[in-house]
Length: 136
Image 1 (cartoon, rainbow, N blue to C red):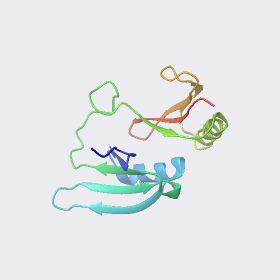
Image 2: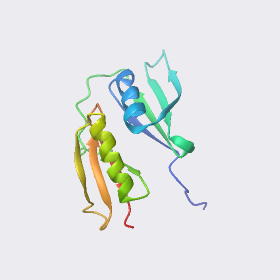
Image 3: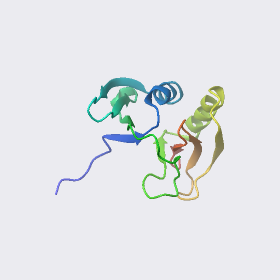
Image 4: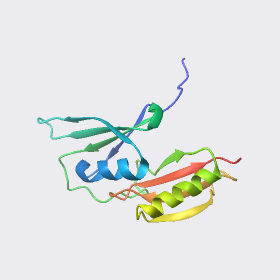
């Protein structure tokens, strides 16, 4: 059986792609690759790529807007952690989040992986995101 080598993309359901796309582009420095809107189903998708084509984040808006707010304690997605190379880069991301007015928990050592540093913050829909570095 061939081994899985990486995650191709991550798809997140958002309430409003027109609100979320600029936030992900500005705050996370992702680039819009393409959009697709399906008039039959009402589903709207926007593909955002990281620099160097390392991964994609797909923001998906479904027509059902009656969903409850995101809660990582419900079955499904808990959070998304984006990797950086060092604790110094974690500190740079902390500066960036502060610059863009994003509320976050300051960098701390991860309780799951000893020696790792993590910043925790949320997107406009309250989806928990992290910037993470493994131990040096």
